[in-house]
Length: 81
Image (cartoon, rainbow, N blue to C red; front, side, top):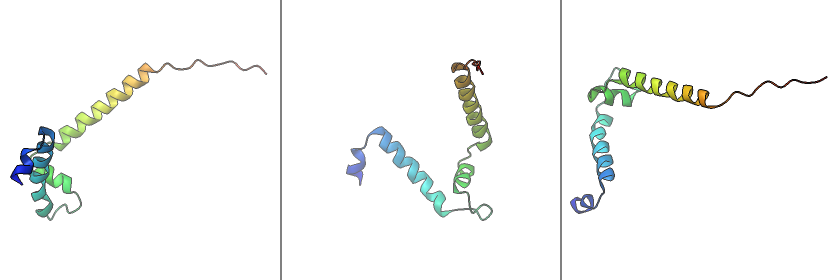
């Protein structure tokens, strides 16, 4: 296995290390929240999920506002009867 890992690029090694670090979380789940494995892992590794959620929401709102401002609104056309 050591020879194979030596051939990996940096991105592949990072992915492997992340997967190995989360592997333990799959086996040590808390009894209080049995359904949310990701939240258990986030708490275990002290990830501030509330701050992360707010940052993502602000980013999505900014993208939506930027897209809305960039697209011109069509002018209303008069219909003749």
